[in-house]
Length: 238
Image 1 (cartoon, helix red, strand yellow):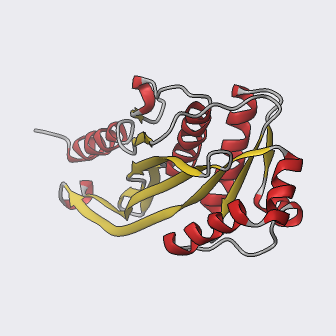
Image 2 (cartoon, one colour):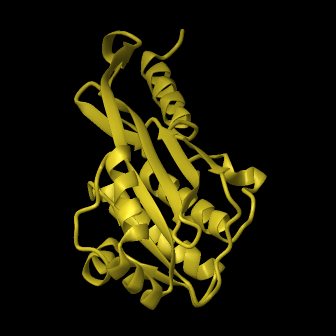
C-alpha cells in the first residue's frame, strides 16, 4: 500500500523541481539603419527622454556605460545636462512634435552654436516602459491528510525600449534600435495541512532590455552590426 504522506511529499518535491526551469527571461534586440554612423572619441552624444519612467532613466545609464566602454573619451550628455546647456524646452512625447523639435535644433543659430561648442554629433531619443498582467495560481493534489495545496500569482511581464538616433551633422534620423524582454515571474505557497512552503521565480525583464539596448546603441553608433547572440534566453541558475 502506498504511504499517502510519502506520496504527498513526492508531489511537493516535483513542484520544487519544476521551479528550477520556470521563470526564464527571453530578449530580442534589433535595429534598422538608415544612414552610416560613426563616432569619434572627441564627439558628444546626448540622450533625451520624455516621460522619465524608471525604465527610461535606467536606460540612460545603460547607454552611457556601453558607449564609454565602446569608445573611451566619448562624452555622453544626460537629459538634465542637455536642458541646462543646450535647450531647456521639455522634450515632446509624440513623433510630430519630436520632428519639429529636431528641426528647431538644426535651424536655430543660437542652438547650433551651443551644439557646436559641445561637439554634439548624435542625439538618442529614448522611450519605453514595462507592462505586467497577473493571474492567480490555485490548485491541490492528493487527498485526505496527504493533500498538497498551493496558491499564488503569476505575471506576464514585458519591458520594451526604443531609441531613435538623430545625426545632427547630417540633420537626418540615422536609425532605430528596439529591445524587448519578456518573462513570467511567479510566486507560490505550497503546503500540506497547516504548513506552507514559499517558492517562486523572478524575471529581470527591465535589466535585460536595458543592457540589451545599451549594447545595441553603442554598436549602432560605432558602425557595427548586431551579433547573433542579440536574441537570447536567460534561465534561473540552480
